[in-house]
Image 1: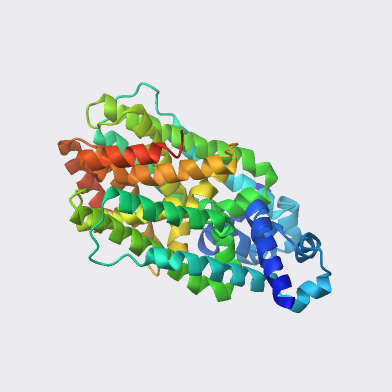
Image 2: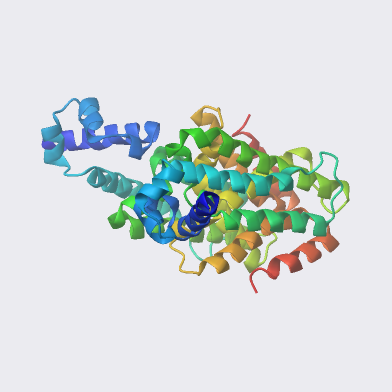
Length: 209
Length: 209
């Protein structure tokens, strides 16, 4: 029963945080939304940061297997697409983390090192994806280029939602997600061989059509 | 005399904000650093947001001429390089704006629309730079590609410093600046013709060597 309540709290918070941004949600609003007393909420989680940490751990559990791209992988465009698609889906399901990344890094000391590790892990995984595409002959890029490319891809992946906010975009969020995937793929396209470029171009366009 | 004090306050704040981040600097710290009483500070600026607004206006005055790239401009690599270099320099001199962009957008209602306009203006200027390079034959890209490219370039330009923080980079700030310019240029490179690519590649490498 207590475990059920705990899970209900984290699930509700994920919805609330994704919707309004974590800094904007108070513990009273959380108790209201779960329909429990503030005292009962306090029994399960002493501070809001404890809920954030629990949610971050769920995110990490889901993203970690996606980051384990073997160093010597040989990847074709559809392998790379699937991996990136799943990565984006996970980022989207826990988008409150990226929506206020700087703020979370600044306010939650206990989270900072772990969050930084995941973000660096994402950049490394993207670099191995690029190298895997080079190894299969789908992509033409040297080591320095795959390094720059994976950094830029990760940067767009992390800050796409912030950028939409910064330019005052009026698009609905689902539309913003598709546009984000499309823009990350557009970074890869110029390095691909003709066939691979056509294939990924088609997969990319499906996100915005 | 009062005008001198006012200028001393904004100049000192620019240094403090760039160094520590605007949210971390209190009005008491500002008064201390300028060596005036909190009452005297209050006489010149009622709220910290008034100083932020003044500094933003100075930034806008400097960046605006750089954004006035004519719609039908014909640009060569060295023109594009100079424009981007000056844009980066301006962003760097007022880097507190980009260091905590989401936080500024969220906390200062009166600034939001103006800040969003400048960021959109930067994306448009970058698109005209790309189109200018296409027009001179230095770059091969269609309309959709220059649109994606300028959005990605602006995103990297806006969030480069945040990303350094998000991966826990230990590099000194000046080094981070050079790396940022290099990464923005690396987005352009694959679209350039051989000669232009070599020329910009050389200019880009100078930022990290």
